[in-house]
Amino acid sequence: MANDEKENQPRGTNKRQQRRESDNKLLLLVIFVLVVVGSVLIALIFGRETFLTSVPCLLGGALLILVPWGLLTLAEKWRDRMDI
Image (cartoon, rainbow, N blue to C red; front, side, top):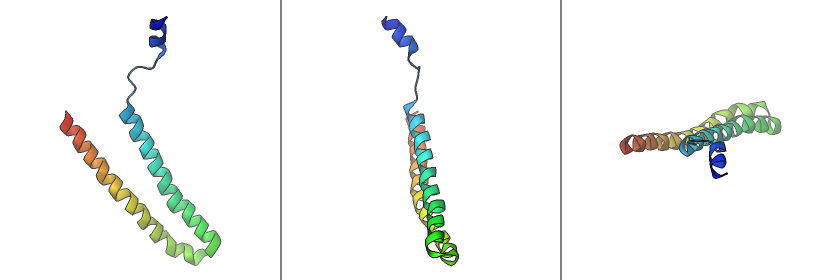
């Protein structure tokens, strides 16, 4: 019976790959909510003129999220390359 249970389990799940994929999805969701949802809410509440001035600020906020994420991703790839 123990052998049957082992055969039904998925083989070789890659936890690092799953974590990277979920991190990328969460990053895209955060950027989407910040820029798109934030822009729409500002446009609905304050009007078109404020929307046009808020978009560059929201994109700057997205950049402040993306730059450290990119640097950490590069450091992680460098670390993984050094482990080999």
